Length: 295
Image 1 (tube, helix red, strand yellow):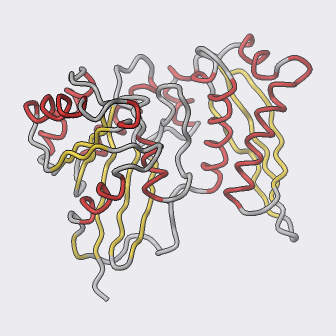
Image 2 (cartoon, rainbow, N blue to C red):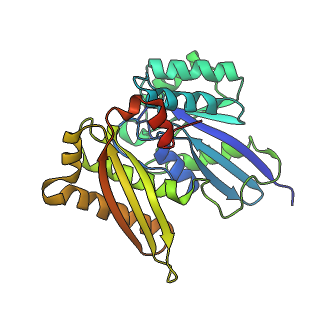
């Protein structure tokens, strides 16, 4: 059987729904999701194999104006992900105006000479007539191969998007085994799941200043997995918020994370968490790299 593959970058501003779309496309939760911007920090690879075609989707950090070393890294990940792929999907809000983030991404897509399609997300939140003005706005701004209205939340239009993506696949051996849905190491997935719960449970700047390191990941003879995780934050006051009164917040975060870890691993997980302070780690080249944010 002759096989085909396509490398596809999913780009857009923070909180536009890229990770939700990636998860829906792949059919499994491989990218963490929250209602806070800049949830995704690394390039997350999602793999969908259907018949003779394998589509490799790269979920990227939201494109924004960087204010820290970590922010610089995230912007660079997005910039590099648009180069040398078979297709870029630019995901936008259903708003009939183009913001500076979209302008910057359109400029990069144009410079890469990469085919691009526009996915207007969150169509479940607006009247259908609104989409006409959004389509007109982006049609004037750039030359997209296709414009597809979707809802990553409900799945509306996503199958049309998948069919369109399939048209960019070129004859090639599969890049990954057919049953694989992500290239992330299990340790990284576990760390991201814990960070997602921090984003869900904590307010303001606290969760954005956190990083998670898996210090132990071992499997017993009976299949149970033991995980030790250290949560790093930037201030002693943040540490107190993460732990909570009598450890209640850390217990809540750990319990939620353990449930998702077990779901992903398909077995019982024992999760132990600690909290440590690393002041201003997001502005340290060494610590940013140390926590896994490196090219």
